[in-house]
Length: 114
Length: 116
Image (cartoon, rainbow over all chains, first blue to last red; front, side, top):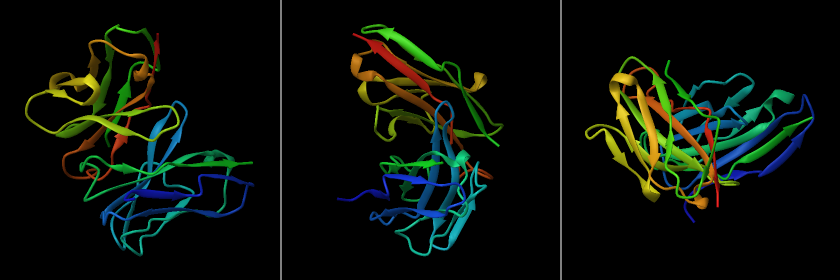
């Protein structure tokens, strides 16, 4: 089925470990983005991409890296996990930008850093 | 940069009561506005959006919102809530052009609990 696929759904890490959250979409969308959702904080934009090879920072980019080598994939990397990065992470995509609705959201990755 | 303020953290209503959730944004230029809903355990879904034209926007499930430019507000309303409306509601804003026009900014959300 068409949509945004995030893996893994759950992950527990130790402080200092690295990991990559995967996000893939099969709708040929140019725009992809990563958000983190924390209780009482809403969703905050981490990084976004307007096309393959183009990425930019959002509201809370520190501690995260992204790349966009293909239209389909937009992985989010934590280089050295910190407890403050415990959160639920959502990937989203849309044809050209966040004004294109509906944005398609993945089911989320729940990440705990111990 | 743009910002969004949602006035209520948690709203508790009885079924059939009327709902109004406040949303104010901060940005000096033209914006597009959205309301999203997140049901327990699910990801966000779009309720409605305002781009231009009639400031009273109708969305899905009987929701509507009114854009008042002079007040920088985009409040969400529903005449009669149901238990199934229990969810968290997020207001979001994006500048129409310029810096930030690819960045959707969300408010902190309002949890709505509807008591049967």
